[in-house]
Image (cartoon, rainbow, N blue to C red; front, side, top):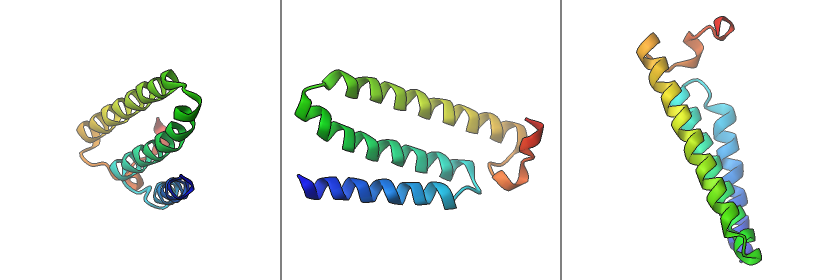
Length: 95
């Protein structure tokens, strides 16, 4: 049980590292955010199964799905308007 906990923490740290240093493209940022959400789901599920709170895992999954759909929608709108998903080509002050 403890070994799984350390693996999930390591997975969370790697995903945060990817989020911080792969920020030049929106798609890579969205993928690293989903990886963060997946690792947090695994950590939360260990605790929620012990305390028998299954409904909180369901709420978390609904939140993750809504967040990913919103991110992909923004990515599609960004690609349709600007033609690429590179962050360094966008002037975010105009938004």
